[in-house]
Image (cartoon, rainbow, N blue to C red; front, top):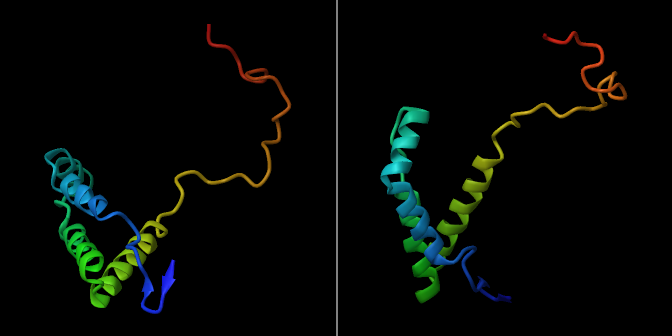
Length: 108
C-alpha cells in the first residue's frame, strides 16, 4: 500500500527487532560470538532499529523511516558479502556412472 509519503508499514514487525536485540544480548549468543570472532557482538543497531520502527509506526516519522530502511539495506548488503562454503560444480564427475567404491580397494 502506497501513499504520497511512501510505505505505510515498516519492513518488519517492530517486535522482531526487539527479539533480535534480546537474542543478541543473550549469554549464549555472546559466548558463541566471542568464541567465533574473538569479540562480543554489537547489539546497538537492533535496539535503534526497534525504536525507529516504533517511531515510524506511531508518529509516521520520515527520519525514522529513512534510518530503518537504510539499516535494512545495510543488513541485506552485509549478508550478500559472504562467499559460498561449497564450490558449485559445472559438470558431473567423470566417473559418475560407475557403482560406488568399484575402483577403490576394500579395507579388510
